[in-house]
Image (cartoon, rainbow, N blue to C red; front, side, top):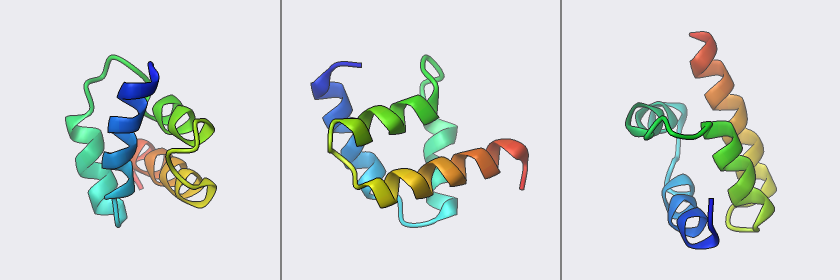
Length: 67
C-alpha cells in the first residue's frame, strides 16, 4: 500500500467510533488486502494512533471470530 492510499484509508479508520462502525467498514472493504495489515500499515506510518490501531485490530478479530 502506498503512502497516499494509506493516508486516505487512515481518514476512514479515524472515523470509526464503535465496533458497529468497524463492522460496516469491514463489509465494504475491497477484500484485496488483509484489513488487519491495512490497519497496521496506517499505524506504522503514523496516520492513526497506537491506541486506535490496537482497538481496531481487536474489533476486527472479534468480528471475524463471530463475537
